[in-house]
Length: 224
Image 1 (cartoon, rainbow, N blue to C red):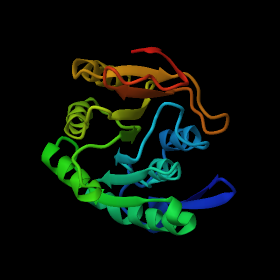
Image 2 (tube, rainbow, N blue to C red):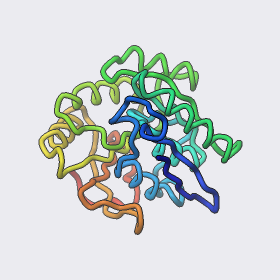
Image 3 (cartoon, rainbow, N blue to C red):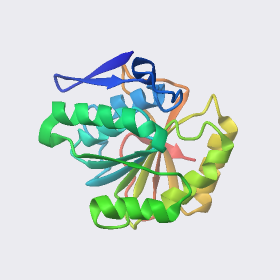
Image 4 (cartoon, rainbow, N blue to C red):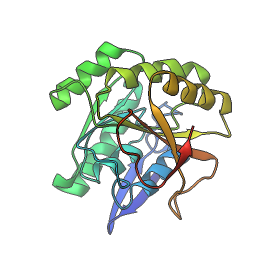
């Protein structure tokens, strides 16, 4: 099975594990959180979220990372080794369809390996930090929280923000632990108040993490 999504009059086709026989049931699916990201980024980055270099964690089929790249941001998409063949095919297809507008690189990365995260970012961007970290459906288990936070910390610079889409209904304890951990690490946490009219799921929450002193992006409401 493959999913076709449209952006700016162009169609982008994303293969899934069931279409290729790849035995990667989690990373090989297009999850609703990735579609929420696709909708959020339809008209570019939300106001106040400037980005030239981005890192996506747990890229899966590449839907969210491609959506981010189509805003004009260079994106390093990462996942476990077994997910990379399918991810690379989708990235190659998106790059062909978007041409020079889409700057995408795929590399393996295990969350919690700070040295590997810095090395991957430096290899692609020539520096150890990024402007934005994107992760969709990133904490469906509590044991993923500490490695995720460690990876965020490893590539964090003074102006780094993180955009996280989480399933508050499916994993409330993990989401709570993530938000508490982010606050403990010195992030300011706010939640987006709106989603796309088509690509939306009210059980999914979109959070923005930023360092103190950075302006709060628009379309946000309250703090965690």
